[in-house]
Length: 288
Image (cartoon, rainbow, N blue to C red):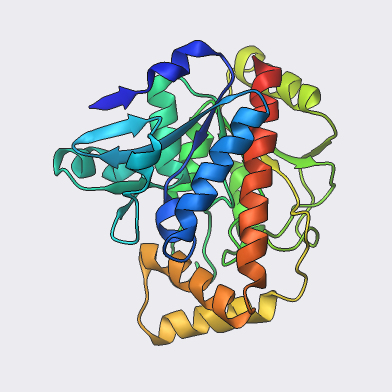
């Protein structure tokens, strides 16, 4: 059921990339460009990109450009629970961070680059909505590079949950967790790191010496948008008013932000995804 590109056998430096960003993270047509450019950033840093998705009855690790172009807004959003059903039903499935981590565990990929990690949603005390990204990272010997958590989450609660699960959150040249669009303002990270070699040494010790699982490397965005929080709150209120629930909340909020910010969040989202892919590749090379 899993088809792995032969290119994965050419090097030990491999970076997994998700397809939810391509299908649901950007306006129609733009996600494909971001996905292809992210692959280019990985290659330029000396690693091999393996973009993951469900297509034609298979879980594909290493989609071709033509295959990636089929991941549009009609693609299912596929987490760990959805992989088998999506494949066997012959649907197009765009993997989330959690879904991608599940596939990575099955085929031996240790590093992933993405935009933001899913976690504990705001209002969780009334509606206990927690992304499978967190639990999958806690149980998978893998390293994810992101710009912290998704902007619509309860970030302190997500950090507490990561601590409970024993997931190190390493701040890339920062002492505090970036808030996706904002470079600063989040809770303290568990450790600050300065170089990819340092990250690689910590990861190896975490995995090999201690037999532990996932790590998160939080890279601040190069362009910090510090005035987005009111728009996020407006977007969440609009989602609630429109009855948007579950997996549809994130694409709704992203679309709202891109529109109401005049495209600033769209540009920032694109750049942080690409920068995270590049850093993930540099870490993969150091690990190899």
